[in-house]
Image 1 (tube, rainbow, N blue to C red):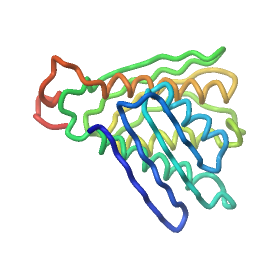
Image 2 (cartoon, helix red, strand yellow; image 1 turned 90 degrees about the horizontal axis):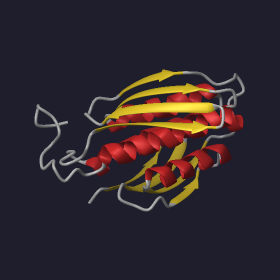
Image 3 (cartoon, rainbow, N blue to C red; image 1 turned 60 degrees about the vertical axis):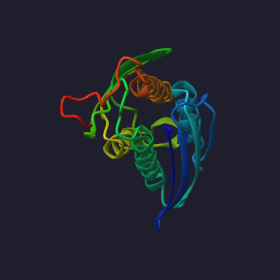
Image 4 (cartoon, one colour; image 1 turned 180 degrees about the vertical axis):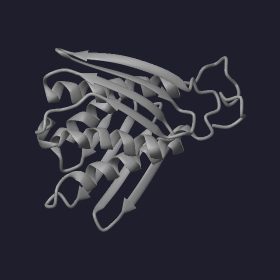
Length: 193
């Protein structure tokens, strides 16, 4: 049962999130941040995961807490859905172009959260989101999911760079969580992720 569901409330955000790793790519995303909704809908579609997110946050302050907390909750839910990792492929990578932009993502679902992010956005960032928050979203996700990720991005258009990044991460995640019929144990020499 490769699913997870979490509801988390803090003084800054209230988030409900459900995830099915073996879904069809259906996404129902309502974060209060239209560009993030677009990115997460694309993430669900290209990762072939069913993803539902309902989030309210202190957007009158700025988008930081909402974006960070969604990354935390999504990472936690991914870890819950993967469970002990028995039978998963574990390692995967993807490269996604979008016009002049290119995003490359390599993942290890080995239980250790780590992010290397190479590339940058303009100071304005995509869709009104400061570019550093795109990186911070993936940092928060990786730390909570126990994913080591190397993300490399290049391009001129912030929207294209961000969208290629979300799609590449989703495609790599889809491949990494895929069940490999030749693996009947946990893919680690330690015996656990």
